[in-house]
Image 1 (spheres, rainbow, N blue to C red):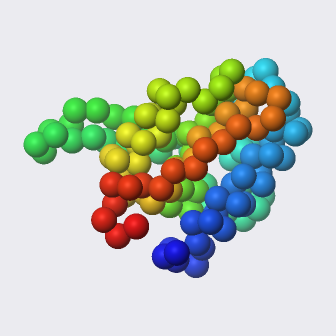
Image 2 (cartoon, one colour):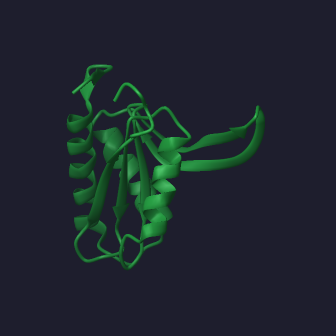
Image 3 (cartoon, rainbow, N blue to C red):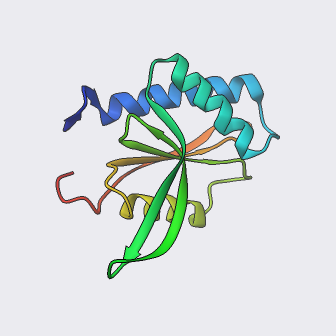
Length: 132
C-alpha cells in the first residue's frame, strides 16, 4: 500500500474507526449528525491526527464551477469521512461519498453511521485515481 505522509491508508482507517467506536459507545444513538461530527473531531484530535471539519469541495465543468459540497471531516489530508445518523447506510449515502472521492484527489473514504445501536461503516478506495 502506498504510504502518504508517514501514515498508510489502513492505519489511518483503523485509528478513525477506533475513535468512531469510542464516540458511538459514549454517546449512543439519537443525536444529530452534527453532534457526532463534533465528538469525532475531538476524539481524532486527541489521538494526534490532523483533522479538518466541513472542508469545501468544488466541482468544475469546462472550467466553470457547477457545484460545491462540504466534506464532514478530512483526516490526515487523505481520508474523507461522511457521517450519518440514519436507520441504515443507504445507496444515496454511498453515492454521496463516491462523488466526493471522484471530485477530489483523496485516496480513501469512510461512511460512518451513528444511527444504529452498533456503529455501521463502509470504506471505499478512490477508484477514480490512476495511482491507487
